[in-house]
Length: 293
Image 1 (cartoon, rainbow, N blue to C red):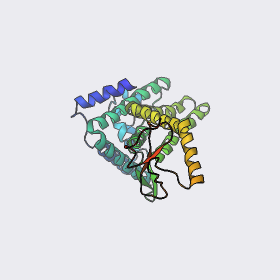
Image 2 (cartoon, helix red, strand yellow):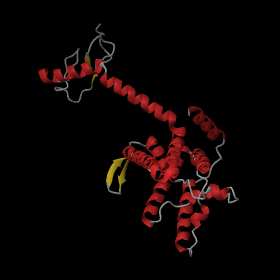
Image 3 (cartoon, one colour):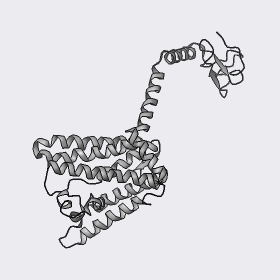
Image 4 (spheres, rainbow, N blue to C red):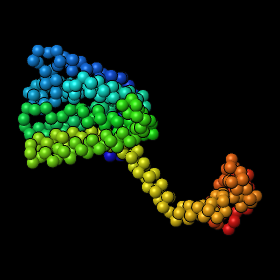
């Protein structure tokens, strides 16, 4: 995974002009136009002519390899508008953060992975039906956004303030729910349920290719923080602090001048890591004292 990520980073660095500027704007406008044409066409569904169907692709309709990204996932105008606004907002921020090249590579890799998965499913289920869409790849944009801006606060339903990272966990729960639901449908509809399993996994794989190192670094940082909080030194420090506050009326006291946080609430106190024990010093003596051994 890391090798692929490094190769993609080098490719983006060496080809700065590769990419489609405002790619998500193109995708959003394409979805909106297809939806409008579907609504006003007389019995003809443009979405059906553009969707990814390997049966027809192998018979010459090669435009379906690309045009399925413009097939809208919602027939409801309200939900379509919300989803397209969401895709454009997230995609625009990611393109500004990454640059046009890297964002285009991210989206095109999701496209290629979906095409490969679609043909694999067709080998298992050789029927002329649409199998793959870009729905989950578009949703996975939010994983990327949350990885970069997890602490950003947004207004849910334009009213409720919530951090992006919690919305990302909700998005992950939706992915897991769709996968589990599809697996449970296998006894009922057979191998057709594979579509609902493969599509979310492909989107997650595309995300992991670009963010594997970031996730490993985050997991390592969390592991270190957990180890620090549960270490004997931290536990003893917290116990000593609590005991000092209960018995002496203060938490910090300078071992040199005797200042306490109770008498000097604006003073900054620190503990010396070179002293043998938990010795506290004020800002004046933290760098000006004899280390106790």
